[in-house]
Length: 226
Image 1: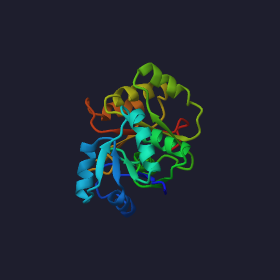
Image 2: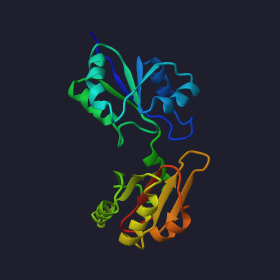
Image 3: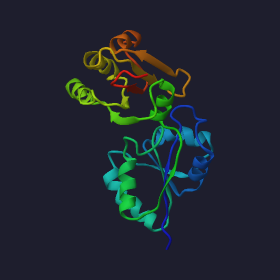
């Protein structure tokens, strides 16, 4: 029996029109769509007329569900895995499933599309010839400052994700560790209120509201380039 395929499908990060024709084709033809949050994804799927069966696949059930999904893939079913926004597998649980499929020699196909880190990078004005994605900044101030101090000699543009609850304290850390370096904050990417804030950590603290909203991408070049 021919094995099924796991499709890693990128979805919009805000604007529902930012989805590829190929992604829609895959989502409409697979046996099941694995969603980080089925309620969140239902809006996108309904908007584009996708009626495939959905089920949750997230950090809290990945270890339990992965063997079952791999077994069904081996039996010939096809799955698409999506996250709440952007490209699955980038700082989320889809990596766990992809790795399991590769180990079991189950076919994995990527249907590329939107990515918050690339969307922010190419519009930031920072050098794009060499860059590194560093995932989410640590939540605790001490760990965050040690992480920043460790990249002081880095010669690439660095990209981080940050929740709205940590972004002000993160700017305080940038002000302490890199007081003269310009930092870019990108929020609400591709949405109506998309915004890029640029300045030193101290300057950004003056520009940010007391209670920032929206997920943030933080970018900077430790050598002050850009």
